[in-house]
Length: 552
Image (cartoon, rainbow, N blue to C red):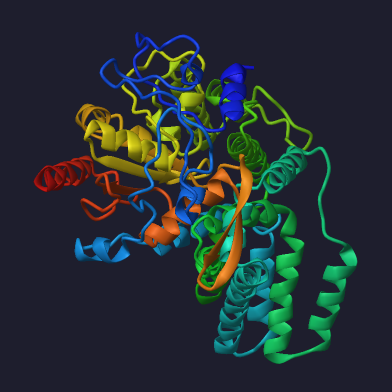
């Protein structure tokens, strides 16, 4: 129930200045900003006035209504500056994940799926079938290669189909949609329960039977392709959660080909053993036999799915401002989950499909050690420790109630026009931070880079930081109609407004996106995206300051 009163005041006043400054700031009693804004003693705001601008730009930029700071409408702060950024050497990628990173993520997911009970036992049977059905060894190897290639084609086609059906922008919007995230959270919980042994999830048997019978009735390449398709259907209960999680993660890039690249990595990892064992059939003899170790992997995946389910619930919680899963609550649940995983790996917890072997293997011991150590590592986070290792998953630091850590950077404003006017009045440059509640790399930057003393000192003292959440689902007081690329669109939420600002003014659509601007909205340096190089980030900030001083 924290900050409820403040939230009500802000919504009643529509948009008030917000920041997290010094607690000793004295505000005049009765001013509406007292509940939403704290500033330094020398940064006293003006008296409350109503935005008077009626131009389209003023309507978009100042749609939050009355405020303490009068938004000047003499300067077009929403004017595009894409050409100016390019002249400064703009090289920032429009995607927050590289294709290499996406491929590696997909490949890692494929390796996990490979060692599940749905896939691993099929490998020796399939390879032996190809080698035995043909007297020609080369033909058997060629068939195995074709089988592996068919797996790649099937999953890459799936990735492309998802993008074509929904579109890159729709997938990006879905990534912070409450219904989508809650449904995906519930799906992961259901799959986790299945992995624990509560029940089995399988596709209708008639689907795989029909495909299998079709494969037997045909010959040549089509027969091999249908066999690969049968594998995809049969292994769904194990591969489905991994594929789903992968597709959700890459959807936030906004790239059309990102899902296909992720699925390419996944499929290559899944298909690789079939081709390798066909080339080197003697390896089949040294292949680990199916057994209890596979159920251990399956249960471990169940614990990981529960952990990631909380991540998806957290994204919806943050985007819509429900505040039911704040940072300390999230961390407490993760601590318990990974502690339980450690106890399970040590044999202290048993699930229905586990055997009665009381011995703990050496790999299980080290996995348990890592899980328990990770749980202990997160404990200081309950009191505000940054926890850089989980910064990509945990909610932002400002959602924490009890925080003993004070080396943080907080935005003075979450409204572009108000922040710009405040910066003009105090003669300071502006740092715009386009971010998102569901942005993994944004949290990494905030805890890995912004916590550096020199970085935090520059941002807090030399700049006016304006943080704009492009996935903020708070409705605007009234929808705003705009025309973009010849198409009329309606901005309905605060996030829509800031996303439109980023696209139209800076020609970017990815997060994190940092840009330094002067009091007229012109860039002071090329933009900065995800890069945890602290000296490079300091140089980025200092160059902006130097260029601002030159303008004076």
